[in-house]
Length: 219
Image (cartoon, rainbow, N blue to C red):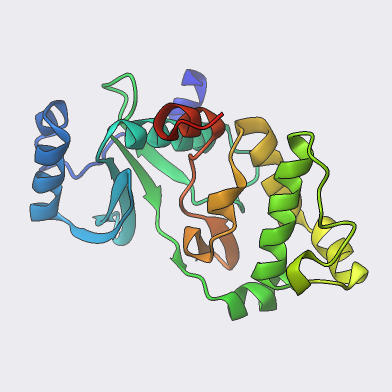
């Protein structure tokens, strides 16, 4: 992964921040960031802040627990690896001072509405989400329901199913699930998607089976 680091910009967090704060507790790190940046989101593992960078708003994700560190690490790995720029927001930088990054810095996406998703992709986000779930079931060796029956009345049109299967977006999601073991649950939630340069992108990435097993007792 290191050879690709030259493509990233070594500046964030903002230069006037005391980076030693990231050697302290999660609580102190978040309190420090709350005093200096706008909080725009929060989940069970990370808090998301908006910070200015080169004249534009960008996103800083700071871990709030061990799960957040693991998700930051996974998302940073994908940011370094990614070949197709349309599936996630570009990674700007990440914390390399620790074994797992306490923070990662990304370009910011706009909020994505279901109607906008459909106008771009030509199929509904709801249908897409069920197809993503079926992809996970198939990958795990379980027989997917979606290609055989109408899943809870959502889609019965075979042409619609084929349209999703043949889309570039679905191909990219299949690849990220396969190459990085990302689970389908978060990918099915519209809130975990945004709009970046006219394309739907995943804005909350990192929940894989290893995190599920380590932090939720999954099998």
